[in-house]
Length: 506
Ligand code: BES
Ligand code: MN
Ligand code: ZN
Image (cartoon, rainbow, N blue to C red; front, side, top):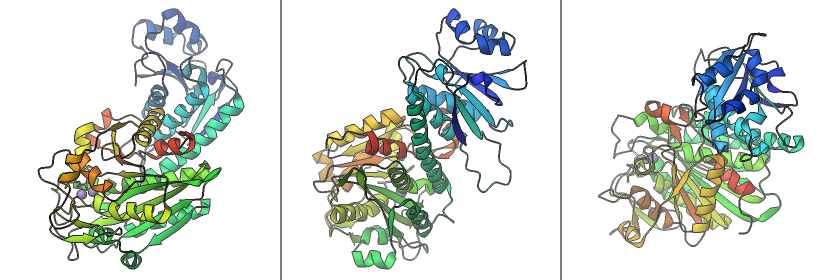
């Protein structure tokens, strides 16, 4: 959908619906004063609904009124209690976008003043409105003959009282929509089923980024063998769709000399391999490529937003199936760095492909820091649920900066520790490390100390995004409304925020 800025008041804009934000706990007089113009358009129904407590401004509350002066609607969007936050605006806008689906409502006008306050500057409100409308309208409908109608155009009406400078609001909106384009592109790729989205197909999606001035290199199975990427080859061995490693490079803007590597787990389908998963929920494992897909989005955003640093994305792509060439429990594989892995469970495949990709990124590009994104463990979902990603690493500052960036974008991360006892537990009797340890306590940390083995001294943060990478049907109503069913693109806005606006002092 398209988002525009307009100098008029929202109710003056010709649109199928006019959206007004309303905070919980507003005084009756303040409500009446703020909404007097809109109230007359619906014959006083707004104040009646407020006084009867049908409307309270609660979070995710949306109430629709029909205009009496012409066709159209006034929609009150609850913002929850003060202070107003970007997240509250994001949620309110997304909730409205969702509730308008399938009702023939194509255009919407939003009163910017009603979504700003002393606590939330207008440019942040504009970004949050764009997030909510665009992310909340998304549906994966490429393979459906009949799809619900979705919003096509949103007009953010500046009106008299928004208090922002028009030029900076325009810039904020332009940047945010570019970033959101990347998120939607990644959602489509991630939602694409594994019969289509093979490792080679993922590599083709990466290659389309050359149009934006990014350099893309694809390593096929032959090249992976030459490089010594025994981890990716082992995991991909059981599938007729051969593995790929993909490198995407953004040369950088004003700080070219500094390099950030971003590595993603790209398992196009995770059956578990010989350590086969139970059938229940296995279809979710098409989302096991989410980390790699988010890396594509991060690189696309780096190019269109002209990230100051050089950014190198590495995607470790393979399909984990139990075919005749599959790797087995008890196999020992040699990875790119030379370090060996004892395979104790073929379902702990993400860390095996990442071992090659992380070591390759460090050896080849000497990054100043390295971040990886992976749907690595079910344990991350057990520990933190579906809304919060886990972060572990070897650098408190980097981890903290990523947590901070997530607080800005509404992508929550929570830090977990890595300790020496865990480092000991991952050691193998027959190889350097083993990929799974029984009993399966502290699964996120065990994944973390395994990956750490391939990092060395480079500042590193590992994001286990198994929870927030995709929204599941059963718990959809508890997910933020800007996460519609399926892939979310989690991590793209967060890492982009870190790369573009993060601390510059390291
Ligand atoms: N892709 C899964 C992790 C996962 C589980 C992601 C649920 C999203 C939702 C990963 O490859 C896996 O199977 N991990 C194992 C690791 C174990 C064998 C050490 C797990 O979590 O059970
Ligand atoms: Mn697995
Ligand atoms: Zn997996």
